[in-house]
Amino acid sequence: MQNSYLSVRNDLIKQYTSIGATSKEVQSLFELKYGRKISVRQIQRVKKQKGLSTMKEESSLELIIQAIKEELKAHGKLLGYRAMQKRLQLTYGLVVRRRTVMMLIRVLDENGSDARQKRRLQRRIYHSKGPNFCWHCDGYDKLKKFGIAIHACIDGFSRRIMWLDASSSNNNPKFIAHYYIQCVKENEGCPQLLRTDKGSENSNLAVIQPILRHFHTDSLSGKNSHRYGKSTTNQRVEAFWSQLRRSYSDWWMSFFKVCSVVLVNYCGIHTI
Image (cartoon, rainbow, N blue to C red; front, side, top):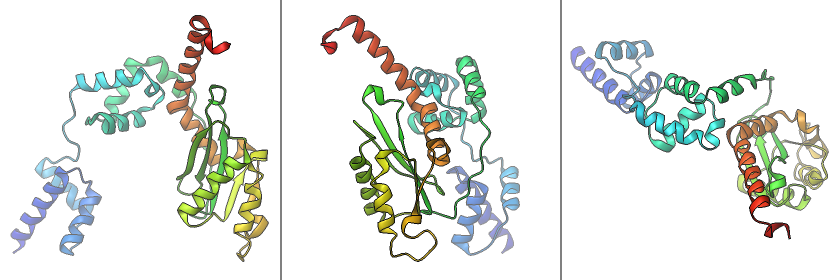
């Protein structure tokens, strides 16, 4: 009986590991299917004995190098090792280890790798009581001179993007109020606290949020449910802008600048 159980256990560990399940996930699946507990250490011991690995055989180095070179031609040049590994897995369907990505980026993009290292900042501590406790709103102006005005709102606890919209303006209070109301409708509720800067574009939010929280009885009801602060200290959304710039907008800013030079030098129609 014991041998039969061990055989079934080992077969399941092999089956689940072959589809990429971690030891912790194998533990949960085994308990769910058979109602019996098995320790992570046991699972790891079996995997070692059977020579099992969650990681499939890595894709050929030639394919990985080709994909990384393709990414480095565009805004993939701004990605770090983790983000690049994920991009290669999701976009190109490659199986690649992080240390392989790290090694290749250092060789293929030495200057970019050094630049990313120098831009690392000390992370500040952020506290939130839970989902939808505080939403952080802000506008992004880096692409504005190219006609793309971005506005976003982030849930402080989960870092979920509540909205991320691009239009001709992020200074129009009507636009910002529309984003907020649509988001509240979709989520069937508003946050306990809404955090914005003192820009005029947020004037409608400063009225709508307290109205929606008017009949609540906690300490953040009514007018206490909206809070102004400096844009630079709006930690959650500023962190998102920093990530956006490193991953995407720096490349697009350079691209649009090149386009503007080409237009000025070779086509005067747009200046008329």
